[in-house]
Image 1 (cartoon, rainbow, N blue to C red):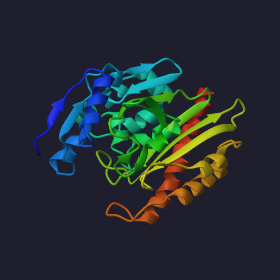
Image 2: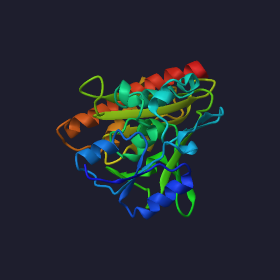
Image 3: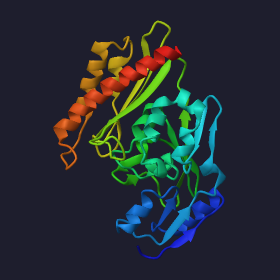
Image 4: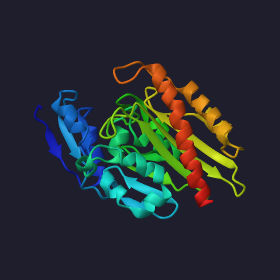
Length: 290
């Protein structure tokens, strides 16, 4: 690892100013579970590391009953221990708990998982399913971007020079809603998703679906939302036929590649299987909350 400068600002404004002066050779350190590995292996050569763990806004973990404000540097372990969040956002917590081992959970953040922009990131499909937004601070302004639009390709995001992901804002699902996240890996722990599926559905008083969001990971250069699958669900009672139709749309939307971890045909198959299974879980959760 080459030498670099380390800064630990205490305000968003200070962090933005440092990143702007870095001219592309600066990166944010939240948990560091991805960044440090990339630097040690020579994937990244940086002149400046900006540690944001002393900035109050990046450590915010607040839920007012309507919106969860999750700072970009909040470790996954803190989310996992929040009982109310587990009740309101069970699918999101399922995804967050899959980031690394017990030790990694104490450092890794959801914000870092999003900014790393891996197509296989576990939290991203779960966040897309909930309609989450990224709050970004920069030299000129603060802006919000839907999570599904944040990554532009493997390892690449909409962040411009000097910009910083400050927090994620996740709206609480309406009454009668349920979310879920499932992934497939060759091993049970500490592996990268071959395919991941995040979903959220809302049921009315008669058990019919009034809204749905379906997102897939590891089947395209970025996590994708599947509007055709959502349309197949709305107006139905989320029975076997509707879930299978949504699964077919998920398979059709998948654009995977062949690699060492799985062939494309298998990823397409898994996209359908995981979509159907996660929707069944979300439906049952929604019925309990109706």
